[in-house]
Length: 387
Image 1: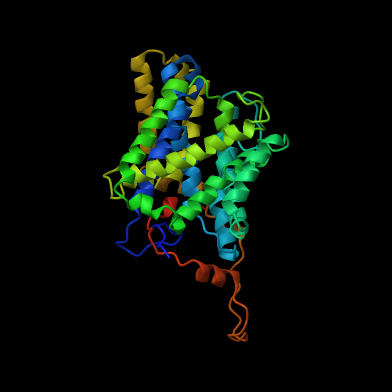
Image 2 (image 1 turned 90 degrees about the vertical axis):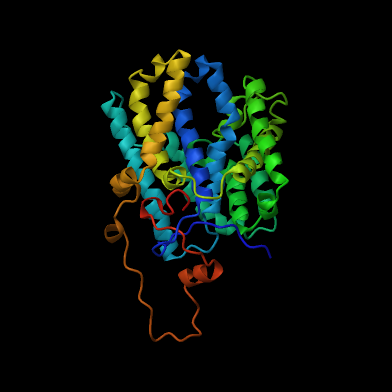
């Protein structure tokens, strides 16, 4: 049996033990591309170069985050500790930042609206992540998990009821990539990541993504990539063949993600690896910075090449600033609310009267099923993005 790929854990590491920089390097790149896209999104229709960027880098944004979410997740049964962590690290930050978004929107002159079933802007990912984590222990019990989840992802496009509410469409459409990420951690494609011949192939794949964006960005519809709604008849194959387009998009996304992982440095990269551990903080905070700039028309003013370049530099700088350790420490009460004593009861004490033949608890089963090496010593982003 092949050894699994290195992965982060949800436990603090002993002093001197570092995070695996491979995941952190990838996460920072993906988070930065997301910030850039959200910065230029409102003016993308005016500039062809931005549309090329959108298509060429699509697989390196949300699909990478989804795959890494699977890498960082456990398929062990959800015991009390895992359930509390799911609520503490995903559900509560989603509610906190949804409220912050509502308050900021109201401060900018909009109506005050509470978002519950349909979280605003980027927060759909946290809702989907919550459901992915609940579904993973069930999915791995299937005989052919990847096949089943892919069929569901393709079929759900024909059901109008699956849309933005509770992020239902994206949850099911991206579920195969989430499971694929979990399988990568189990050792899937290990030979690919280590073989010398795969490096030029991966580089060719990344270049191919750029070529597709350059040549066919106008033909690739936003609905093909967003995964937010049911199919519409905007494909060359009509409604009957819309599932083939989605299958091609998901397959290309999976292929490009492994290409990116193959070329990503596995060693520590100065500054990048440190900032990569703040990917979750970047994801949560950047909309609160970009929204007022967009609503006040400051982003709309960018028109010349120099102004667009300055906008891109701003987006990259913003991602780096939000990922910095001081900012992570400052906003940790928001990204990881300290509400354990308020919301959770103490774990039940072990019953000394129970003999060794008693059935083990869910936590004990989880620990037995998946032994995880300690690799985190930074609590600010520990197990937040990836449950």
